[in-house]
Image (cartoon, rainbow, N blue to C red; front, side, top):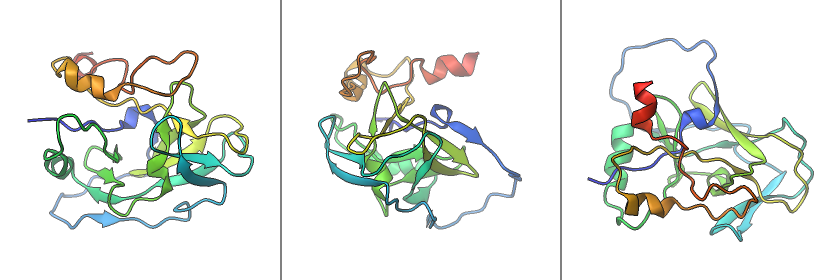
Length: 192
């Protein structure tokens, strides 16, 4: 079965604020609302990198929280089930791991954050707080500049090289590493 690639939490600054363990019970997938659901600082439009991108429409200062990555909050099993039906040559999803229990599927009720493209020379980063994902500026961003963060998609050393090739990078950065995948496979990281 084809495994779905996700944007990883370790690709981000993970911050936990007072999280407590609770008994797990079945629950309906949910969508959070947020004061960062939209942003007057950005707009989505055609991208030279890939499909639709997100661009600054005003100056954005380093450290600014730009937008929250929103969508349906589902389990990892549901994400795998939902995207197992995709064609093998389609590596495109809007999935983001928010925690060990939650994946955000921005393909359902997502906002403009889902259109932020990968970059090997990012101007943004993802920050996870209480299983919520925010996009913050890591340097000053000028109007007209496309926003990007390093996806660091998870993969395993046993994954099919042809499938991994679907995640080639098109960012055009001077030091582009040629892939949106994390630099090390997940199975090797787990062994450390």
